[in-house]
Image: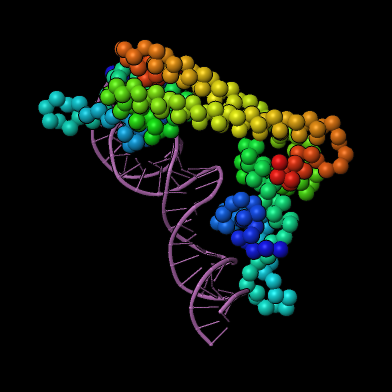
Length: 134
Length: 134
DNA sequence: CTTGACCCCGTACCATGGTACGGATGTTAT
DNA sequence: ATAACATCCGTACCATGGTACGGGGTCAAG
């Protein structure tokens, strides 16, 4: 049981980020303590919260948006594995597309950089390629 | 010589995007015509503008930010090829890092998806992996 | 019983790359 | 000359994922 700062530390994020996730509905905001109607002041977070925060971070690392992560968290509760797999497949396809784009860009740029170094006269091939719309 | 709509079409972007690039200083805003002080109304764009717009689009495809593209455009004028190569190398390194991240995410996710399909009992491996922080 | 550190909450702001609105003015076709 | 349409320009808004601010409350140590 820690405070919000401890939770944030456990998840490797800032306190403000935790609060942001709460606003987004990704993390729940626990009730304040004070067993008898006393409006106690400071919320406490347990292992569930930490697990959830880690979930968010690693799903994010897999490229899911916060909206998609919200859905995954719901699916965690509903155990709809088909839908989870569908989301995973979608994400894989998107990652494949993105990777292909980046590899193409990288290859082209690398080629141009080599060319530019090799031929120090005339217009810069990198700039020229961009001007041709390549 | 076309209007802003023609320029936008030539670059495959919307008119508002052209105007946005102008605001960002990436494209110049030509003087309005009207040779004798008459404040003529409609700006005209030539091949230079089209080339510049294409430049922006293709540099963007290589992952440069608009700020970096602004610098590249300046370098185009100054012919500082060393700096251009430096920017290109930076970009290549960033692309490599990004690609590695995405490939790792893709591989992990793919693995989990297969696993999830293979073992339809117990907790969903995809969800479980995220909860472990993988 | 005060000081200092931390928490709470609403609200505002940031970067990035646009997209939309709307009144005024310009241009073109009929 | 008048309707229809495009351009101009300032300004506001959008999504995404945060980050910062400021006034007030709470809590533990000294």
